Length: 153
Image 1: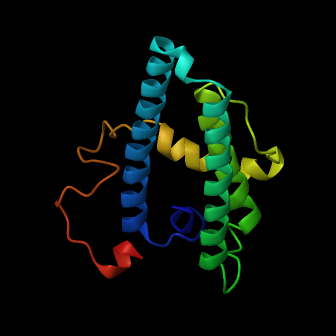
Image 2 (image 1 turned 180 degrees about the horizontal axis):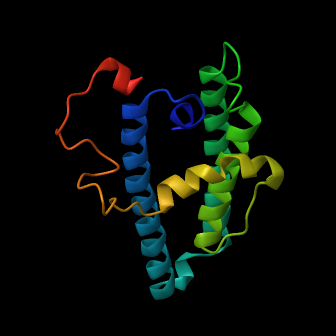
Image 3 (image 1 turned 180 degrees about the vertical axis):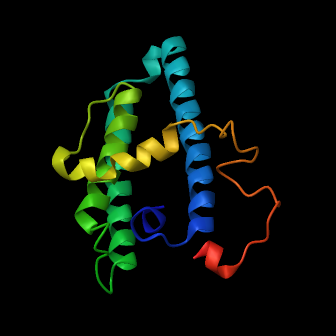
């Protein structure tokens, strides 16, 4: 999505990523609700050992994410989406998920760097509506026109 936003590239892929991101956001929120419901029904299951296991898993997962980012950027950083911005975004996602299930945030996040990713949440969380004056979808092509390589890239 950042390639489309900053360089006007990969339009079609960006639409697919946006749709997938919205779907994954819904799945994540559902998972958080399930955990909180179970926590209400069986608070005894959510002790310090549980919390330590979750925190340890988050640290492990973050280290794995860093390795993937290093691999993706092994030939150099992308000027409009540098590594430090990506890592702050990931840390913030972990923190928000932990907070949503009642566990303290574990990563220090630089909010001034994180601001550079605000657009992503706007795209994923915000609802888009059709244009009243144009009777077609503004998010997806409804097969009413042909698509060429120039349209996609």
